[in-house]
Image: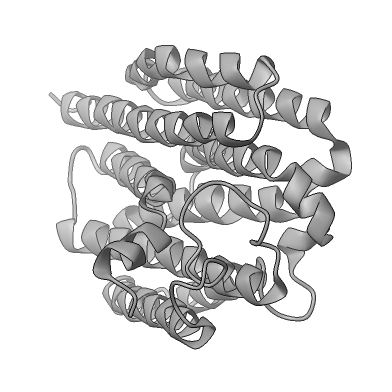
Length: 299
């Protein structure tokens, strides 16, 4: 019988900053646009959607990779199916329970905002979560994982969180989403860099497998640089307080150094942890800057 701890580890909690940070920043953008006003219900519902989708995609990946056998030669976090800790059916059911929670919270946001087109965005998000490694032609196996992570965990999550606060889509929200999408991509790039040997062996053609080890390491560094450039642009467009996110730069130094050193396999797990921490601190610092700006803009 699968223990609660195994289910928790199978949910890959270290990836959760990729769900939390965009909601925080998007809500901060919304507060800036509304001069410090915050709708707590909408923010909480947006967070539930993001967290449920993140955990759902993690269980979905565990299930799909497990039944395909692509988890057999990997190092890293717990794989419930690949390690025989839970049945494929149970993990698949857990994924769809999470997707159901996300759908219910999303429907509540639709009712509160009156924006019925959000149903389409939600359906696309759930489909993207499942089809990453699931279905007959998973896009994660075709080297498109980073594109969809940037889109859904960057642009959609951040702009969506801002939209439910303001009812509008703005350039400022989009610029803010670029940094978060880039850091979310960096997590995936580090993960796929670590898994190049196993993915090559199992036939999983991730972007890292396609472009090779050296180019993947350069891509990781580029994602970090793009995230901080986005902060500078946001400061020019919206508020200098956005520059508070630059305080997270020291947290980027260690993972960049490890990646550039040529570290392999288990040595890259530290990069995943550090990048997740960087994303969370970056998101919190940027949110604090946006909130300060929103509270002082009409003082």
